[in-house]
View 1: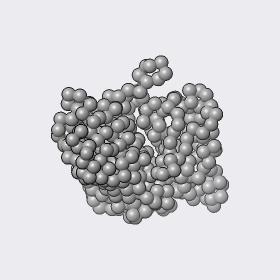
View 2 (view 1 turned 180 degrees about the horizontal axis):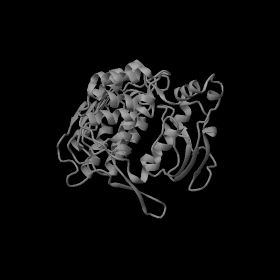
View 3 (view 1 turned 90 degrees about the horizontal axis):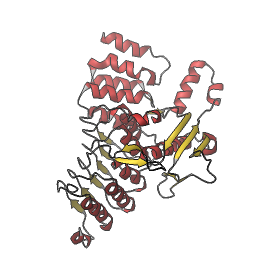
View 4 (view 1 turned 90 degrees about the vertical axis):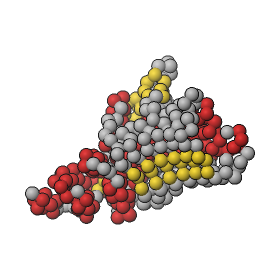
Length: 381
């Protein structure tokens, strides 16, 4: 890397399949540091290497934070070691493991130039995609995401779908238009994180032991901050109670980065959180119970416009099996309000799955009279 440091006008760095990290992670760390030292760099390919340590990923993330020219980062099969790194409590006892690439994901929140990110075949589970969703929520440039051959699971699909279809009024800079989901597989969220699956439509609840020493815990708390912001609920109202190691914070514990708009959590301890988005005025002012329910979900779920449906449709088309497609559709029903035409398009792609598709998306379709959905199933029979 020393010979490359002087080539400050280098635009492409091709180091795929160079055995980086095979004997020692020092070579990975050196390359990660090199990225920052080449200010004109636009394309980096580190695929088929062994970037398996937290330090290598942390340094790579720091380089991405400070780099303003890099547009393409290819990491296919570059970190397939799975959940290796450990977070520790104050007594030095390991609490939870996580994929080291999550540390790099967090830094993407402060990058402003990256357009294409290849994460295929990296052993990234559902928790990883949630951390990535949080990191790219305000990213102004990312357009293409390669997800193939990862154990994404339904929870991971929810995160990817939210990233693709984030409403324009909440994320006008969102340019993510393609996520290739070919050959992805199912996976459960790690058992120790099971109680912390983010519910976008209604995240109201009490959360014990949110571990802010892990990327997932920090992403969860940042997502709550962002959700309150989207609903225009003051942080002081949304967070009914919050403690860090059972102590109430004396000062500001979260803030927005002035350059990127990303939320920054200033604590690394265990958090107790009581959160609410309750707004009964929407229900009280409705003329009927049915309309009240519809208005409630319209204010809570993500409405899918035609522009944001196109990336979801492309992701659906990139899948290889009916099992994948149904898993993806199940991920939509909890967080989105879709139109009847969206459902019919899904059904037209897989006519033999029409009854299953209607059943999965029935509650997500934005229409009071749902008899046309029943007709679709009846006609198919």
